[in-house]
Length: 254
Image 1 (spheres, rainbow, N blue to C red):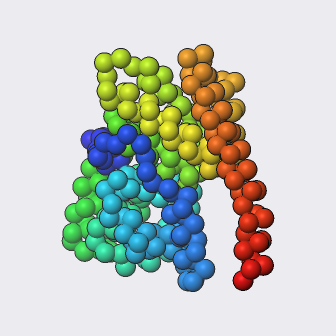
Image 2: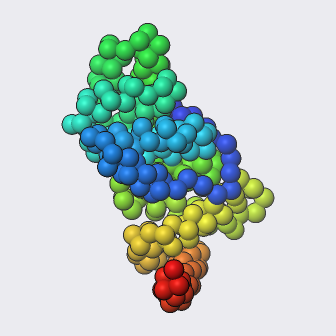
């Protein structure tokens, strides 16, 4: 069986990941409050409505994110895919790829069930997928910064530390000489770790924990990331605190 080398990694090269997956999840949760659907279905429908599924730079991490969600909720897949079948063709293809990437024991059988109940075009697409073996976020080749997005997508779905460990593993590439691709990936890893450590306490905690595990050449860069994140958190906290009296004064004037 041919192993897939493109679906997750074939994305435009960029220096930093740009997808705020946590914000996408929050919007999906807000959509849930207005429907009787599970949050995962509401999330997909909301992303489709907002045009998120149409952006090339967001498709791979969303596939990684949804693949993990599907893998954690195998008992709900039949119900979910009945709802998701209302998506337009390109969006439905994306969730089919996410299901394929979930790589569960029952994935292939469920895809065949979907194919049997679908149009000829969907059947052909499913059969095409089943002829290949999907890559996972942890074994996808680190060929561009887009792979970091994929790892963040899987992390935001699971909270699993191993995805951040792989991001940390490329930090030494910041010191690479003569290989621009590796230098860009190392820089993107540094930026994304700092940004997400500022925004998410769990990411900061994992980075701090990894300081005790990483070799010397990684530890130095990771310590700088943690220090910069803490400094930014402290600065943002001071800004927020200083704004409170101003807000109250404005309230009194209205």
